[in-house]
Image (cartoon, rainbow, N blue to C red; front, side, top):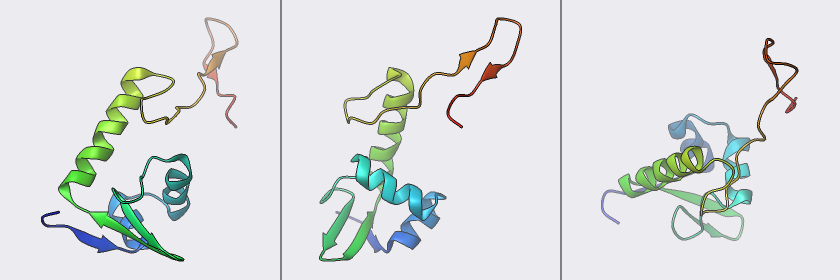
Length: 95
């Protein structure tokens, strides 16, 4: 990989402007793949920061929003918002 850096989870989350818990949720859901996006040796996790990583994450984001419920990577989106009736604002059942 050309022009890549190894970052701690905190540094990686900070660069993506996400929380540390979101980062580990992405790991558990398989959004970030071992050997491609990060390396784990024992309890030490280091994330690879490169142009390829950013392009890969952007592609997955576009795939999720275009496909709706599920992308080829196995990432699911939130449930649709239900409405009480046609004249009212939607009710978000996620809370």
